[in-house]
Length: 373
Ligand SMILES: *Cc1c(COP(=O)(O)O)cnc(C)c1O
Image 1 (spheres, helix red, strand yellow):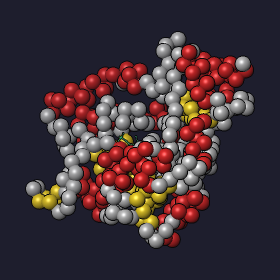
Image 2 (cartoon, helix red, strand yellow):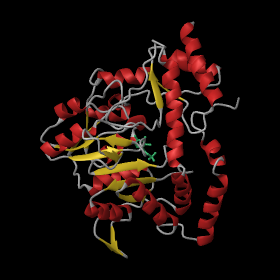
Image 3 (cartoon, rainbow, N blue to C red):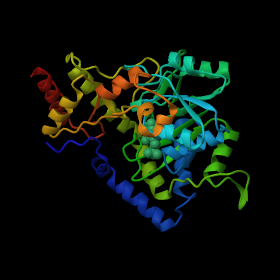
Image 4 (tube, rainbow, N blue to C red):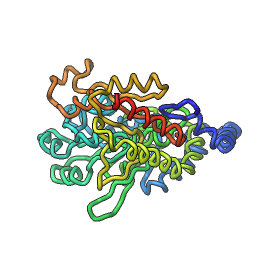
């Protein structure tokens, strides 16, 4: 049996090697490295896939920053988000002088709890920022209603959920990141659609907002050497775009492979009573950026699996409101008990597109063995 990886970027590359190598060579030959060639092609392809405007940028963190800037959020404005996410979501708010206001999450889905969001709304609230953690959408329809009622923006951090579909009560569907006013995505190598380096994108239906995003990502430029606002320099390069373009062609198959691995885990771990499996919802499909279980014996299980050469990772071992850098927000232990408990109990199992049946069997057998002891 081959070595089990948490995420197998190289193994996946080998299945598309010729296509990817050719695409990269084409970029080098074309010398269209920046804001041209493959970048424009990839933006068009992704915008067809998502049925919205796509503006690529340097990474997912930049995508968030550019989105907040494009919406015109001002210092002191409050943005409601989750304390159980990757740090970038919150970091960028603080960098722009915005105030992150946390609301607790659902224990089964790890995602922002809409009832807690409602309680956190004040006169200063300007936006709700759900994160579609581990590949499943937060419950967006109630949040859209709150946004409408209180005149707020709904900003989706869809960095972990490209390809996931949000399912409305009436049965209609939209892709993650295209439901709210603006959506943010990352092409970090381990993400659902991963580059071989950094990359990101902003999604929006609104043409004017799309133009603002494009301008901000390009130094605030309006026409050549004319600047209409303060911007940043954030761009996807053509080599990454060429790789992403190839991988987008295989994306449906890749999502299916993740879902099949998740189904294996579901079916083979349901009987283990010490484990809580990730909850599936009626309002979202799941693309399993991570397959994350919960158990009180998390650290012991992780160590046991390590001895069997099975990697398993803790995303995330700490909640943001208790991190040293965020002390100034004035939170204490117990403020968001669900998120705090998750930080102690979650464990993400190997999840990627190249897991074999034998590997999956070894993983689930080992977990069962641990709990039988
Ligand atoms: C990865 C990620 C980001 C940041 O993306 P980068 O491309 O690493 O900057 C932001 N939010 C979430 C939830 C992420 O998982």
